[in-house]
Image 1 (cartoon, one colour):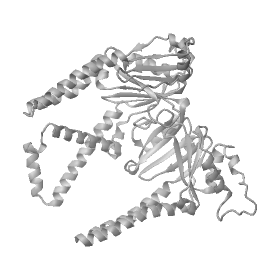
Image 2 (cartoon, one colour; image 1 turned 45 degrees about the vertical axis):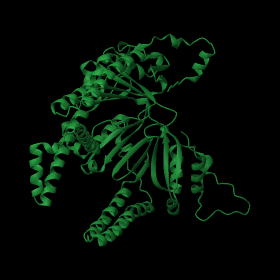
Image 3 (cartoon, one colour; image 1 turned 90 degrees about the vertical axis):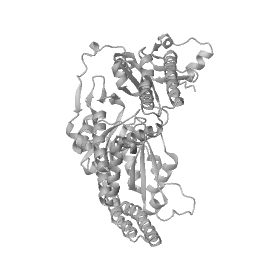
Length: 544
């Protein structure tokens, strides 16, 4: 697979024209210490498996030879990878050539670079190395719009971070001394260990513990080991089997809960140890964190298009939240551009305000406008309807299987569903402040996003059959940042067009004009001018 970002330049070279001055920039190689780190990282995973196989008596010679062969292959692959990888930074582009059998050619224009992520796992830190990941804006909404240098020295990584996030390529080589007039580093937030109480309330920590447990179980199964063979485990299982069912279930549930809580606390500490959010003199927001794996994410402020406060249901019940950046180049970030760990809700709004340099009352804490009552009816029906169907099915199954308690249990979910629908409506809201479009939605995961009006590059109007009957429209603000689009759900048809027109003035002017009608033709009932404008905008207007 070959990726060539500058087709015009390549065509010119094939035609025999004079290569540009950028071609005189020398190529660089990755740090030589990667010849040790790459193979050693695989050996760290392979050697314990071989030791367990030999000590447990399950040492199948085939498995041992396979593990040894994998170790040798890792050493060879590491050498080939180092020999075939080179990169260079010209005044206009960042280029990376890698691969032997599968050659890759990546070229990223420097003016499209949005974020630089420095990651150093434990082995990298031991050898003083760091991985540099460069994210860039792409023509479409996709991940992988950038390149990765695995790995360079720590000093080189920091130099690359400053150089690649410069405002102008022409000033890329300036030193820190030449920037004497730049403002000092400003600390916006740092870790408070009291935030540990929010760790068990996040889905990511629970999912992380589940993944670790599944990996451990699969490893033991592959090695032919059964935890039940351990005497202590076998004795505990026998005692639980002899105990009453409710007591056994309660003991197992409490044990799992304790394991999840402890694991969530450990994962939180590993991910967010030494967390700091700073505003750097080079005009970037920088998030540094991590205990075993150190990570530094730099987001160019000039590419920041807004902020988002996310409240998953458990975190929301604990009055917590998490602030995230809405910026180009973060589409593939696994943490979604998180600016902070799970923290008190007020702290999340403060961090979003500090990142955007705008009072919170104008962004994520703005007073929002309610949506039409029809939106409430729609949400309650969508929540209660499936619950009623489930309850009816439960009564039928209960009669067939002589489980009389099943139907009433399912019926008890109906008021819970109605409450969920009401909460979803209560979370709906939008507002247009001085420079931002603010929208909020969701119940299981409530999101409040403040999007810069200048970052909106188009609109998408969506209207299902049921929305059309209720006179509602979902309006999506299309942007090149974040998820690529942010939706204001279930607006009135006229309100949707008015909001889009007010957010980006004159963009919908042509679509708001009355549609020409054929002689003698009449508009169908309920076909308001705003609804016709919305349908025409949906058909003809979708930039980005």
